[in-house]
Length: 253
Image 1: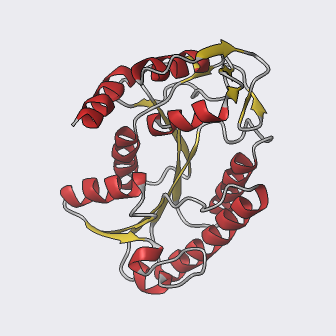
Image 2 (image 1 turned 180 degrees about the vertical axis):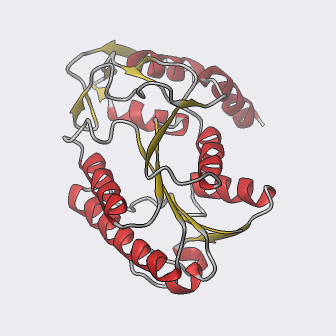
């Protein structure tokens, strides 16, 4: 089966392409560097020829509010039009757990706009809502710096490894479209401030982490439901400590 992965050279896309090829499928890693640009439309018609499934894991080059909205809306419109013309039978998109609960975030608003376009397209679809990736924990820490301390909400988060995201996406891509969304999360929920505390400890960073219920997460005030899945999500297998250990070992080599 031919599967097109939009954003196929990025963090998630490259892992997904590898998994799907290992499962015996004809996979096109579509990205500007391979001649396919969902934002400009360049190469989309040719990429869709013979495709049965399209998985969209492309990300915006800028997270400024208007720029990220323009990217996801324009890219999605171009992509869905090309899929409709080619008769694609399943559109899969990666989105975020909590995207509809944190409207203060311009990025989350853009993801909701993307999801709405998919739902209205008439193409059979599945939207995978994933929790935050372990790989972005360092960026969360950087965003929380206040002087010599890091101020973070104690609200729960249930992050996961990008390897588990890619594996779940591969499973979803090969399943029947649900014409709705499914959720995937890490195996363990923990307070956000504790997550960052563990990360700093592993990297031997001695800065103090201060729990602060008023601390914003990329513009949003959190509660325990903001960044955690609902009932019966799919769960990744890789625990945060195991991922940290692997990162430390790789850095040592």
